[in-house]
Amino acid sequence: MALSFSQLKKIAEGKTKIIYENPDDAGTVFMVFKDDITAGDGVKHDIIQGKALVDWQTNKDIFEYLNRKGVRTHYIESPEEKVSLVRKLDFKINLEVVSRRVAAGSILKWGGEAEGKRYDPVITQFHYKDDPLHDPMLDDTYIDYIIKAKKDGDMFADMRSLNATIFTVLEAAFAAFRIQLVDFKLEYGMIDGKATVIDEITGGSFRLWPYAKDNPDLNQANVLSELNPAGRLDKDTYRQGEALDAVMNKFAQIAKITSGFGELP
Ligand code: 5GP
Image (cartoon, rainbow, N blue to C red):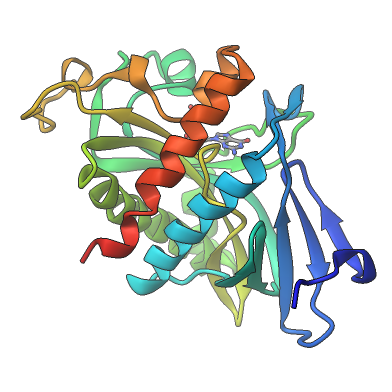
């Protein structure tokens, strides 16, 4: 039987999802995807018919894959289209945790890096989640201090290592489809006293650049010549002002690729 969300209590509404209580289980909530797309911390905003469905599909495929790989996530199942059932949090951690394999996006500006520079191991940064402040990056010295000196230090150490581990897990999955995971952003909450991956992982969460060659050499100091950023499959198409149907087409391609994650070992 289809769920009737008009009858359920809305707990929260974000830019791309609504969270409803689950009347049958206080330990879980429903996450319902919206057709909205935003960029620039909410400054740019559009609605793309059908985007909720493809994001839901991508999110389902990725979380099912991570759960299968033993990663601690909030995701349980997707009871119907555009709806996921997830574990309720003890509390949300107001951070965005970004990991990067290849230099792109904001690091080119504030880090002065050459586009395509390869990081090994991946680098991980914490950002304080606040749209009006544009999610400022937290100083690593401060994070290291919290890890060593504070009561909740373990939580930060866990997020740092989980983020890098998840990056390599998803990087290997996309590699099977000849795509480089360039960078991504994850969010965390506390469940049963442990930092756990929450929120959504969709085309807006990462950069994906297809391989440019049959046999790319991805172990060089700079891998730009091996990849095809112009063929990107991610929200940069929207950030860069491409037409909404082109953006939708990219998100649909992502869902098509992640639908193959179930076949991966
Ligand atoms: P950058 O710092 O280069 O803008 O972003 C690094 C990575 O994190 C990219 O994959 C980007 O999509 C993701 N990211 C950064 N900030 C946000 C955000 O506020 N929302 C979402 N959905 N992704 C973000």
